[in-house]
Image 1 (cartoon, rainbow, N blue to C red):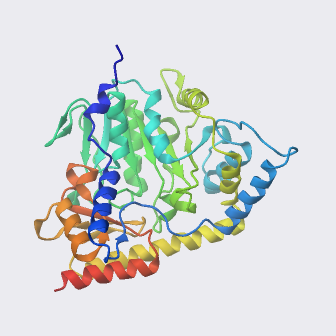
Image 2 (image 1 turned 90 degrees about the horizontal axis):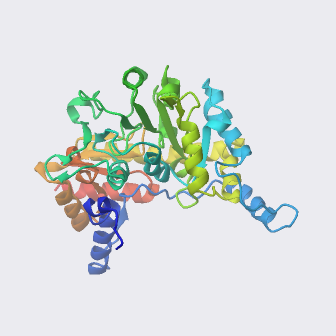
Image 3 (image 1 turned 30 degrees about the vertical axis):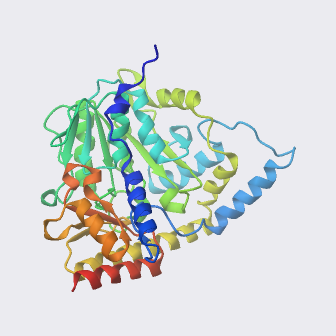
Length: 405
């Protein structure tokens, strides 16, 4: 008789953003006269840079000619893109990363969710709280979660509280852990981390033979003197895996392209994690399409860089409008300086979902309840800066008008 993976049954019935979409659809059907402004899911609104589009058009034309057609490509990415990434994201900044330490994929979500395949099920996982739900849910699916309690979370997962008192930064765990998820600039709180603070994590991981899974999907939004890569930190090559994405940086949310960096120096008990991930990817993945990879390569062209910097500045300006508008309306708000996310405290002791419902009902604004990111997210709410400037201004005006009554 067939048996299923019972770990899937332990999970909540649906993913956080699916719940939000369902609520929004129900509200839209009940109130067709109201205009809804979505600032919940972190999807971009600016189109792909022209340099990227032109490169993809040219690549598509190549695929239509027998002489330049390509079938299966390298599972880990074409050499032209891996070399462009190594040169522009690392070597130019004094970081020693080789092309064969870079693995091109269809998204950082996929990679952060799949990386657990190369680790034993009995490893102890530590996550920030609040946290991007994928880190937890995929470990629960793999059998590392234990049992769920509404008050304490998953029994086998170590939670690192990120609160106002700690400036939403995690503290080093007191109990032994094996796998540590860090995301900076952080999703959902929007805060960054200093080199000094990140050095403490690298030192801890090397001392305790743990691995840091470092999600740097939002590094392009950093405006202050903060590390863009964990490999800027001494000792990181022997304890850290880094994830990056073209989604928010270059508008690839629907185009799908990202990469994971695993240094060859990263070894445990004589086993190379680079080799293990290479084996996993070559078995389970046939790579990202040639057309998309040529588009990603164009991100690093002078024209591509100019356009994506303009787009990033556009979103950061939206974040500033959100943060300053909320503050003027009496809210306590964080983030939005090194990140496209603004993390606000719900008013009058409201729960996150109560505030979600109120905001949607009274203003037509959609955000993300903080409790969806973990127990310590309760009482907070996330807004994204990825909408248009016009919608961002309109949304803040609606919120201001309602809460200043």
